[in-house]
Length: 338
Ligand code: NAD
Ligand code: WQD
Image (cartoon, rainbow, N blue to C red; front, top):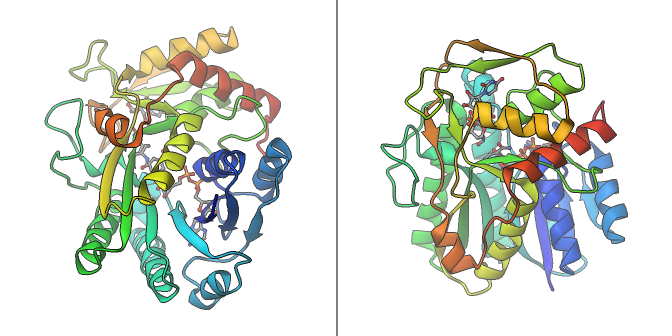
């Protein structure tokens, strides 16, 4: 099938994507510095698939080490999926240089080394955050982009850099995948999201409340212009998201140049709907209190995923209740993460 290099492959979305790629018969090498992941995630991917993958532990910004990965690959690397990077919005406001350095320099070094080795297919983890505060929903890929925090600005800048590289080198193929809000876990409950410290995102916060690690959820505002006043997002099952990457790998084999896809379900759910779905999944109430709005939050953001449907032959299959059941199953089986 081919050999794929996955940067950041030990992380949440990366580990689920490695599993899907191994199941499709791809050979995988992961480069991850384990700054936000554990080796155990990939051991479990190997156990679940009955297949082996190679993990090389170093920073993507380490050019010599990255060069050696390409030079010494047992079979030539044909494409790269670039997940590695930092992703916490709040932390990026506190530590902008860390975010710009990690996310942007890692991408520059990666693309330079790819070009040195004649590898011309790259899939990049972008984000719905590049739409800023969208004028309307659902958003299509041609909506105007903007950024409101350093994390989001790294994604927008990297998108621009990759567009420029493609303009200079039209044979360099890039898929910019704009993920909406990934939640859920593999149905086995053996791999999932394992945040450090107090989670920033809604789903892991709720599962930690349900398991008793956190006292109650703060709902960040109920005065938005949405049906119940709470924020609306396009939550997407991480397994669906992972399968979108397999489709993107196949797409790049057609040498399409630069392609951009929203990966979302096309449906928005509110914070209160999310709470109710987790209550159904767990059979327990989610204690919550209504708090003020969180700075930087938008009222509603959800995708029009039609383009990915048409051009990738991909669409999300799992609904919100399945996402919440799988998140809860992972939390119950792994109360302290990996
Ligand atoms: P994650 O933190 O679980 O995974 C990122 C991985 O990259 C981790 O395993 C970490 O150890 C590794 N890493 C970080 N910096 C590195 C470096 N310099 N060199 C090598 N490895 C490094 O995050 P995730 O949720 O799996 O996100 C993956 C990608 O998707 C990120 O680029 C993120 O910005 C993007 N994304 C995530 C979301 C989300 O809500 N989870 C949404 C949109 C986009
Ligand atoms: C979802 C909803 C909150 C926590 C972030 C990044 C975005 C992308 C996805 C990477 C919102 C509400 C949350 C809580 C709450 N990541 N909420 N109480 O903010 O849509 O997007 O992750 O690219 O760039 O910004 O996700 O999970 O933080 O919030 O009420 O304790 O839940 O206000 O309406 P968000 P989230």
